[in-house]
Amino acid sequence: MKTARRILMRTMVAAATAAAFTGSAWAQDTLKIGLLATLEGPFAAPGQDSMRGADLALKQKNGMAGGKKIEFIKASSDATPDKAVAATRKLVEQDKTPIVIGPLSGDEGIAVKNYAKTQPNVTFVNGSSGAQAATWGDPAPNFYRFNTEGAQWMVGLGEHALAKGYKRTFLIAEDYGFPYSQVQGFMASYCAKGGKVIDKAWVPLGTKDYSSVIARIPKDVDALLVVLGGSDAVNFLTQYEQAGGNKPMIGGSITVDQTVLNYKGKRRESLLGTASAGPMADSIDTPEWKKFVADYKATFKDGFPSPSLFAYLYYINTKATLDALDAVKGDLSNGQKAYREALQKTNFKGPAGTVKIDDNRNGVGPTYITEVAKAPDGSFYNKVVKVVPDVTQTLGLPKEQFMKMGLGSRDVPDCRK
Image 1 (cartoon, rainbow, N blue to C red):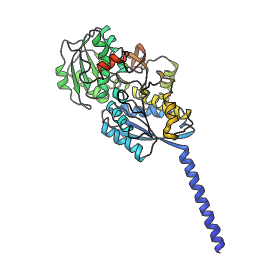
Image 2: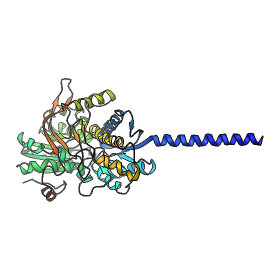
Image 3: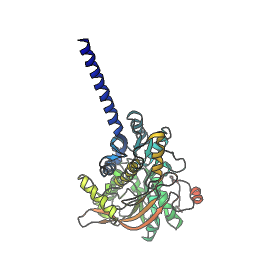
Image 4: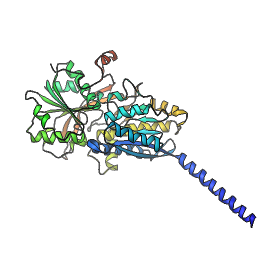
């Protein structure tokens, strides 16, 4: 009887040990990656599309990278730095994700970059944050941004605005890092070539009432420079229409993005011809872009007529993350040294051009100057009118000249007189 019990106990121990090893092997074969986007607040719709972009990049790899099954652990913020860091901290410290992709918005990116410095064994890859300071001046060695940033996205738009006769403009923009970068990218060349931004209205993120701003718009300006996104852009456009406003607009990169072009107000028709700029455009005519759009439409029946800027940026950052895992066969040992070397060497032909980074781990790539047009099916899209290749973070200026100007802020640059 005792012998039988001993045999039974040995069998149970062996089974438990086998189960433990099997569970361990499965855990090693599944790699969790944190995925953070803004699913609350004024950028909720862009945040949903950013998740689509990341999901599409993973789907194209059949859910695998580096020989392992990839599991996204998704988290949400509301476009505020504190919420972004809290969500990122949970992904790193509780969920134990060794890689985090995100965040979405400008000041969130700066905050996550600073948090990254406290977590040297975790690799952080940007989502779509476009504030310059996330990678310029005080970069984190473990924070990578494969997209170009907000100032780079506006290079060339100033000259285009002047060519359209917009010599005097009035600015309406959200009051945080990303719009500061966008405005600098526009004004750097616009001011240097004679344009005037005669006044600036900086508004809090999430503003709902624009009546006081609309009342400030001078009658003698040629156009409005509007750097708003998500529901902020829709609220302004709706209220400007109701107030009888008729000035043409120059848009920031997310002001006439697909997340805004699909709103249904009458003012929408007046957006036709609106000049803007960014790292992609709806009408790019390359096989890579057409495949990206086709895959997006086939995968997401609830998506936009064309992928938004946010879907595109999360897509390329996620693809870079997964490609580097393939390059090192999933090896994240030794403080992820080999993996980070593979990230630095990333260079692939993305939907809107080559994806690569500089020594600060920031993207270098093309900027597309666009104008809003209407497709035969009635949908609105951004039509390419010019491409500026290989835009760097110094905006095409010598480094010394850029450093003298300083990073974009409420008052930099300035050309009111």
